[in-house]
Image 1 (tube, rainbow, N blue to C red):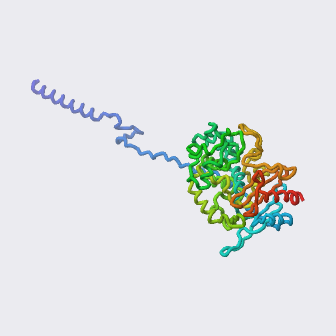
Image 2: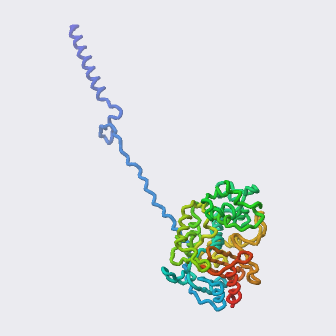
Image 3: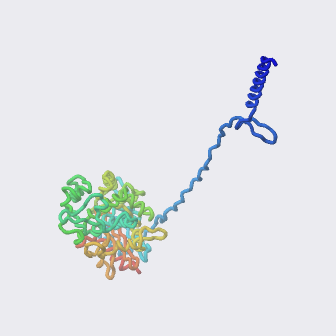
Length: 449
């Protein structure tokens, strides 16, 4: 055999073998190239990303706030004034009363409402206007008793405590500088805090020095003049300044004006048109002119001017309102008397708890050093005014006007008087002789008859 042919044949054979081998390798399956399903071959494309819709969380339905019920309120009171009986009318004439209202309470209910005279006398420029149970008047010291209701309300809510130092509420230390003794709220309200009316406070009232902040009056150069030598809690010394501090304390702890707190917690629920500023009385036409010795002594314009000055003072420094600047009618005071007689509740309205009212009227020593001086919390006691009775309440006299609210809780009786001018004098205890005559006559000839 020809060697050359053999080599050629072998070369062709090797080349054919390589071609067949390459073809076989190319046709062999690779991973992810095919899927066998029911004798069919499917060529798969490269997988693509699948978009997944985001999970939608349904919004929560808004939860409705529970509807708060409207606080209970009384309806405004309408009284139909009667002509005074002859005995009472004679007292009014004897004391030359210009205008007055006298309301009688029996068994907690108003049984008589008497009116006499004028709330405004006729002049060349003004007409005569009648006095009625709705006539509003500045009631001076009676303000204390009414203001105490607001203080006790804050005690119930835990914002005040009768036996804590007033330093805790005012935010600065207050002590009698002569005895280095702290003062409690209870001592202020029982006039046993050793606070004087005859120092710098008197100078402020009569314009001898400009108005000072309460802190300056209690800590600065004026402090020693505003305190007595006695230790707080031991002696009774009536003090307008001490009582007026309670309004500042209420403002300090509540963050609101004393007038606003009283309207919110006392006057509005009881439907009483009352305020510590003449400018905030709703029916201003009812405000009486005040007369001293039969002459005009305090007009509405002057009252409004004084109110504007008070409004310019910081609430926490306003020690000229809570003790004596309340404007209210005899009808409003009658409702206050009913509230206290009924131990804090009238009909659907509860203003104070029974315990708080009893605390106001109590003269017992409680958790402090003050002696039993015969006075409750901003509440006077009269044991000799009407035989056989202990009357609780308060009196007021200023600019010629007189106001009295006295009641006997034992049988729910009481007498309320407002008067815008008369011939008046006071007894040794500073009590109005005119008011004393009316109260004795009412208890003698009207109540229980």
